[in-house]
Image 1 (cartoon, rainbow, N blue to C red):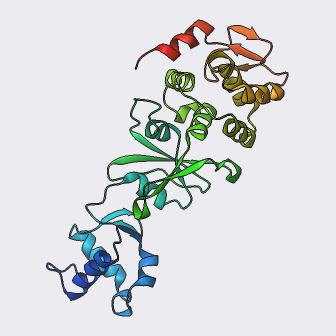
Image 2 (image 1 turned 90 degrees about the vertical axis):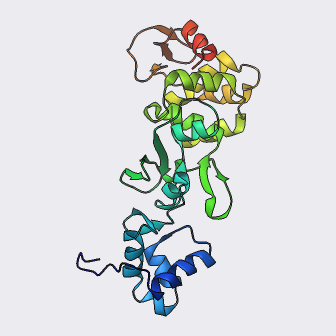
Image 3 (image 1 turned 180 degrees about the vertical axis):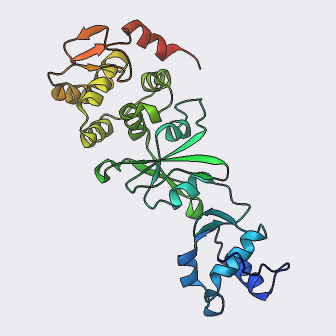
Length: 267
């Protein structure tokens, strides 16, 4: 809207009609183009100006260009996934959502198959991580109706975080979460297979033998079958040093005792 567009001081009949329409149809947030199609013709012809007027008056929040929400709506998880269709709450944010870490992420991590610039929604930083469509699996719906959003399930979350530790918070937390929770063999196999990251699979396979030798036998067997001839670091971001584990073709640049200590440590 041009800067010269007249912003009326009081609500006129069209403003009231639009607010009533949003209330009657329980619309908490919307995309301007989609709303214009739904509205009665009397409102749709000048919906851009009406919405901008309501935004200027504090009766709507602008989430990004062409996307608005009611001022009392603050579910950032929903809004962040809404502006990137098919996206999912993931990584550290999902880790915290599933109570797998007590550390609160001050950035909201969203996994998406579409390129999307990082943004800020209602004061929260939002980081969009683009992945291939084949890796956009293992999701579950949280919430109902307009308050629903997708989040990676527990197994997908732990695989994501070990695949991209920079988005997963603290490595100590990842080790602690993996060591102290129960995991589904088939999901771990399915998700690591989809990622095709041999180093990731070897790391999780080794950690499974360390912490879940009985309950994750299926995944451990699968992981062993993926072991290649190249040595990988247990901590991909650490120094190239430490014990060599021939069975898993891993180098423990974090000592076994330290890994065990991480599993038991508090926050």
